[in-house]
Length: 389
Ligand SMILES: *Cc1c(COP(=O)(O)O)cnc(C)c1O
Image (cartoon, rainbow, N blue to C red):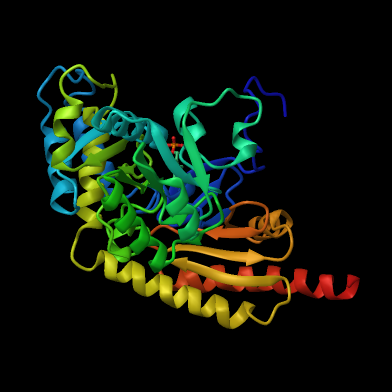
């Protein structure tokens, strides 16, 4: 296809026209089960009626005035975030990378140091700062020199963590479940060590919840399930259900480091974004929502294990809540394409992992349908491998 776009994305062949819940319809009327959800963005499904109504109402009142004004929406959303988390203050951005930039800047300013420890296979964004924080060479390639000074260690390598953190370390920045890196979960022992080491050296713990936050893993924020209490955590993807918005949440001790004039954003926390976020948080924090995410996720993962564990191409089914990975022995791209052709949208995470991120409102029946397609595609692929072997 002729296109005037920079070819930065390996695009799919689908042109989506409309969406409702977990179902996406393309311009030819073909329906797909959307277990990508805009990459963990549309957690409440496409065109959620409450989010739609909230944004529509705001559209008719006021779109933008800048952060020079008192903004009731920001106050409300910030209060909801701090009421449901270990944080005390919120800064709004437009994206995950910007939320992480704010976290890196705040960590530097609050500590007066600039050494930050991050993980290999992490993903924190594409700006110059967050790209340097990201421990993946393929994301750095051609863009150097990188922002100083990051040390990358392997997830769950406690010894490497002990070696990397010094008195000169401003922060350790991690995802508790690496999304882009392959749906890799942090060990509890590593989380415990992280807590201890950050306390011992007085460095900040930053948790990137851009993908794991907003109910994705079955709790409001994933760090809860590891008993962690980050000094700073960041949000974006699921916060606006498709309306661009991000947030950095920090503890009270950091307040003075981010005084007037220290940081900012023209669009960050704009009234439309806040209308979306307020409706999203109201839904996600509602009584039974998160329990249902855990229950559906556990059931889905158990079924996947039952049906796929015997296949020789499958290494492991892993995940938490509705963030699930099928780690394979082979490259997954052809299987993801076959799922798409069968009417199911799923994602890769690295070359060998199929990543599954349905909207949190997915029904059991939709999970069953998705399961049937996955089992068929993976079983067929496995059979072919056996023949070729
Ligand atoms: C997607 C993602 C980001 C980057 O968010 P953008 O909105 O694309 O800038 C950062 N961290 C994690 C963990 C992510 O999954």
